[in-house]
Length: 394
Ligand code: PMP
Image (cartoon, helix red, strand yellow):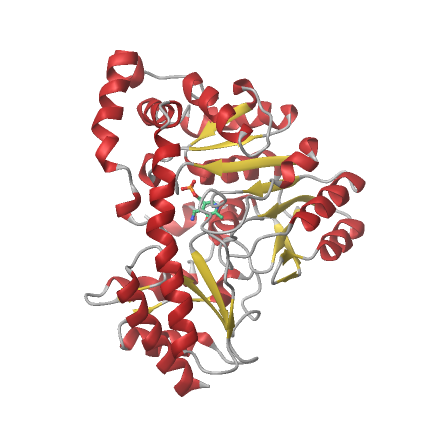
């Protein structure tokens, strides 16, 4: 059978993911990887998992293993309503939809909103997983400029003024890949622009809970509630393998999200949602979150110290107050892909930043470094290797 003949037009258009190709070598034995984008397993609250599971079976019995509502398991939606309230978002349990990871929201939004050729405005650089979620619906991307404080509001305004944008996608806090965070004034300005142009923002916020310094910032959602779909997840504060994400969306969009989710997976795992409900409503998250931050903060500090020690002049990097990533910028025109291959030969990996741009000719001199996966001493070793390689390549 000629399988290629069976592919849908949109499938044929999908490119094999270049980043996945180059990262294949990262699992070689002895490699220190700063390339990942995942939480440390030591951050999972393993000491209470059995207790949570027992309390789920005691409270809900077989119902925890039954089909459930597409919108989500009600005790979890109630707990999430309180969780988002602490971030300043007022949403009743009914206004929250639980999804299979926040990735599940991104895919459902793509399905509901994107027709072939629709224009989606994204930061340059942006989260690649969002691009992968939207791509099957065949949009075009409009890039928006960023600086050290994230999206530049004038760039958003210019894009919206030109017209024809279906929605804007942003990660305002500790962004993946840059770690950048929009200051309060920009959040307010962005909300004002969204209202002025009657535009929709998808605000993706998986990282704001991972704050090691400074004070929490309100989500853009609270400044323009009717113009924002707020997307978040328990992946970084509980366990990503449980696949529990959620969104707070304007009513009209919510209705369609539920319809498409019905067709995608009927609902997110009932047992996992019940476990998450126990974790939140039993106060375990409040207790455990400081431990997660205590684990990551010294790792970030070790990386910042090592960059200072080992990287030559001409390089600069972000020092975010939280999240999982640092963003390093080298001298203009220096290509980090050959640097990547040389670093990998010396057993240290990172992600060349150009892969996070919708146009890979941009950002060739940038790197994304993850600090959640290795301990401080290992991070120091890896950054020393990277420092040697960039010094030789500069
Ligand atoms: N959005 C961003 C910006 C992310 O970095 C991630 C995880 N890498 C996700 C969404 C998806 O997370 P999950 O599906 O596990 O909730």
